[in-house]
Amino acid sequence: MKILKSIEKPSDIKKLKSNELDQLCEEIREEIISVVSKRGGHLAPSLGVVELTLGVHLALDCPNDKIVWDVGHQCYTHKIITGRKDDFPTLRSYRGISGFPRREESEYDVANVGHASTSISTALGLAKARDLRGEDRTIVAVVGDGSLSGGLAYEGLNQAGHLKTNLIVVLNDNEMSIDKNVGALSVHLNRIRNDEGLNKVKNDLRSKMSKIPTVGTLINNLGESAEEALKNLLVPGKFFEELGFRYVGPIDGHNILEVERNIRFAKKIGGPVLVHVRTKKGKGYVPAEENPGRFHGTPPFDLDAEKIEAASKVAAIPVKAPSYMEVFGEALLELAKEHKDVVAITAAMTCGTGLEKFSMEYPERFFDVGIAEEHAVTFAAGLALGGLKPVVAIYSTFLQRSYDQLIHDVALTGLPIVFALDRAGLVGDDGPTHHGVFDLSYLKNIPGMTILAPSNEQELRDMLYTAISLPGPVAIRYPRGKGPCTALAKFKKVEIGKAKILEKGSDVLILAVGRMVANAKQVSAILKKENISTTVIDVRSVKPFDEELFSDIIPLHKLVVTMEENVMGGFGESIAKFISENNIETSSLFCHIPDRFITHGSVEELMKDAGLDADSVAKKISDKVKKISKVIA
Image 1 (cartoon, rainbow, N blue to C red):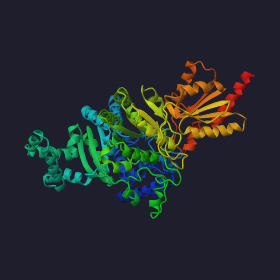
Image 2 (spheres, rainbow, N blue to C red):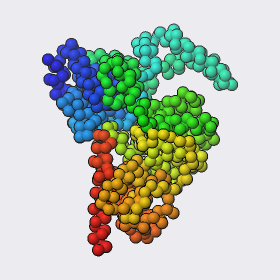
Image 3 (cartoon, rainbow, N blue to C red):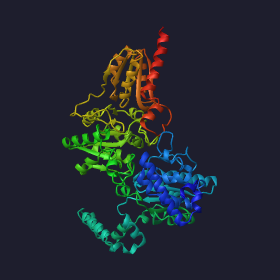
Image 4 (cartoon, rainbow, N blue to C red):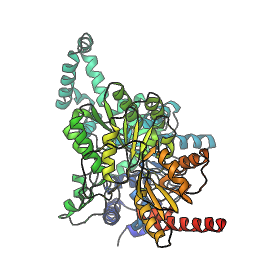
């Protein structure tokens, strides 16, 4: 009999014996692999924390006690044992369960997350709320080593060490290059000076230091003190203890009872405690263990191990049209050959932004700053001040984290930085934390910011080619996945502030932004059957927009319609202001993301949910035209 069938809540796992817990881990892994192979999802992270999740839950009494998951990539086991195993096959599907923690789904999900480095600050807030309300509960933050590259994580650690309240931070360490050395250093500190790897690092460091005039000589003369400082740098416990944490570990994250024992110990000693846990990403599924990056977030795949190599590349190697991401990567590589001052920056998304080839071809001109988007933008500002042409490749949703830096460090000085905003608009299965539907609104209000939106891959190439020669900051926003092009041409300059007329009509004018151009063409075809003549324009340049063309063409139509994958306050607002200020007499209809967070599902399902699919927009226009006709009559 399957043990998993009897698990409805975390307290059920406390009834199991050690061997039964091991069997449960196998069953959970089977379920995760089976579902993700069909639905896609974050496979490797979740497989790596099965035992860790069970161990933490064994030591706690949830939902009274609280677990805050950082990012949420690793929450599948948590979902399965907290009453959602029967719904787990609906993972990431429209109206199914989310791939991330969601408070709306379960009382066991403490916070809605999807961005990195937030868990420690959230958990600390929960801990202080507990203290002030006189409650009795344990608060645990589970954070991956990758998320510690984000500055917010250190801000949380810093205050937690200062406040001294009871808080447990579980550091899930699955990628550190010094992983094997960390355990030996922690358990056998007096072996450090004899460690061959450490001595090599130390000697290399001394060699480099000695080349620094005066300072290098002084540091090398410190002898034993320098060795001690280096030892402390490489021993993680020392670092966290300096921040005011008690350090526990590293421990084996695949030993359930060891995890439970150490979490209970952390509860007992009180104060801020960091439990360092080592895990293997993708554990239990060989392809994911061997390629954790590829299976971090994966599309559906063939479970047959012999076919996995080909199946896992489906999303990366297009059959007909390349993806926007790939077109961007190839275009930047071409431009870098001609422009020696072009440099590329990413925030821990080298492959996810199409910069893998660039990083290999021009390693000295490529910078991965880790999960530190604020730093990425300000670092780009420094590069620009130094005479270079930085191109920051970043997802639209993650650029939100850098809004102050965009204003203060980039726009205020008018620096020539190109922001390549991937995943603009609706992204699909990852849901509300990942939809890039705010960028037009928050970027268009920044003085001096140019905003471009390609409707196809060729336009993306041409816009990038144009952007690197502009004197101020430029944002190019483009969607996830493939566009309509099957063949790409050489670079061509794009005239900033100029739109493109695609179809000419007399009744309705549709101003479409980016991917909405394709939908606008479908809308036009539908309306044609109703004898409604439509003009379709590819806006291309959102800021500045084509005032000359719009001044001439808007008055010629009964109705002007804007279509954009952005919340209200974006391009449509700009057009409404333009019509009002120029006293243009026309009716208007603004089609945008509604004033709510859009759920997860396929892009097609979400377009319909948001009322931006061709049928929905065509109906809105048809109804509006009928009302206008009645008024005129």
